Length: 359
Image 1 (spheres, rainbow, N blue to C red):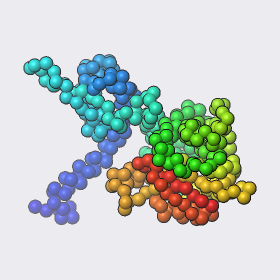
Image 2: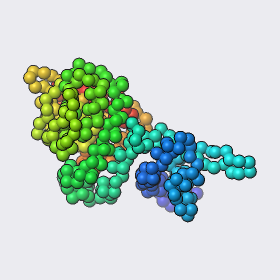
Image 3: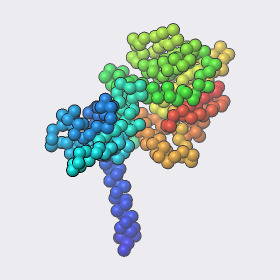
Image 4: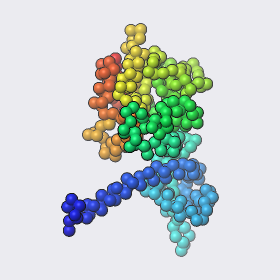
């Protein structure tokens, strides 16, 4: 029998209700992930050396007996979403099997103290000071110039970081954790840096990416260029130096300029300004170097639907800075308007592409 709501079948309406509830409670995904990191659960399992039973886990965490069931609910949900894996432990005869939890490749990336750890990225993204901004979508939409962070924090995001050392450190640690993933990607991207004598990593933070490049190409001179408060008091060596400044004013000259996950923070107008400064830096003294962009390229026609969903989700997320994730067509438009002649896109990571731009 048809419903009175636009002649929809009850089954259609019930499915729609379930979909609405899924989105309505989607914040539980990120909050349960945050909880697991706050409780140090990935490290507890890692240090245990094998799947850990619920009883052992709650014992280590010193969980009150009244909350053990809640821990199990959270772990079951995280396991359902692929963060952990549930293993059945065979117990003694006449006793029930007890659930045990093992790490997956996802939670391995949350083990603190390991080479590839993205826990700082999660902690930064889910910090209430930043994440609460998304409650201001409606107000932000009607603001002509303010970013979503600006609406919530009361100041420009970068000014906020300059004035709040705690959050500046948190943000830089998050970016550094992500940069370590580049070490894996460079195994297939050596060709991009071959033949270069110098490179400037614009917005390079504490130099994590630059150090990886320097280790791989010891003859390459690397300059990390970022806000003065980011690069002050950082240790240099023979082929790695730090320079403070403003990328909208000028960029140190080099054979190549690297922009890793920088341009997605900015509007098209600002990106063109940045790219023009990059072009000036790589075309001085008659040289014609290149700009290397590591960023997302949305390609709904060719990529997996789930991957596109993640990119579109991050496209909404980066609106907090009035930035955007871009399609190849949108990238090409920026490059042309900034005065570049050609570009080449290569795969980098699952989410990011490597774009070489030539003057």
